[in-house]
Image (cartoon, rainbow, N blue to C red):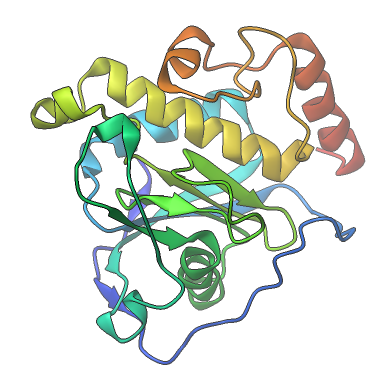
Length: 233
C-alpha cells in the first residue's frame, strides 16, 4: 500500500510560477520518490490499483509511492486564468469552467518541495486546459518534464450517462491508463507511440483509451530500459 498522509492542504498566496516550456534539457535521476495528490473530488478507492500498476510498469523506478492527501484550489485564485467552454462530451447546455494546467502544477510542485519527493502526480475531477497551448481543452492529462510532475483529469473519463456509477471497472482502467501514460512521459519523454495498443499512444477520446493496453509496447519498454541503464539500476 502507498503511504498515506490525509492532511487537507489549502494554498493561499503560495503560488509557484512555473515556466510553460517543457523542452529544456534536465537530468532526471532514478530511482525517485513519487507523490500523489488529489485535487478536488476523486475517489481514493482507486489508489491501490494505481500503485499496483505503477510498480508493475515502472518496476524499481520509485523507492516509494506517497499519497499526500486531498487538497482544493483556494477561492483566492480559483477564478484566475480560467476558461469557460461548452463540454460537448457531457452534452451540457451551460459552459464549464476549465482550470489551466500550470495552476495545478503549482500545487503539485509546492507539495513536492514540502514533502521532499522527486516526481509528482495530481489527480483531479476538474476539467483542464493546457497552459502550453490554450487550444487544448478538456485534457485527459498533461506532463511537465522540466518539473517532473503531471496532472490527470477524470472529468471526461466518466461519460455523462455514467456519472452515478462512480469508479466502475471501465472508468478505473481509463484513469490507470492515463496515469501510466503521463508518468511514462516524465520518464521517457513527450513523444507518443504509434503502436496501436501501447499505453503511450495518444488518445483523442475515451474509446481510444479503452482500446489500448495498460502496458508499454516493446519499443517503449526499450526506452524505459535505456533510462534504467543510464541511471545504473
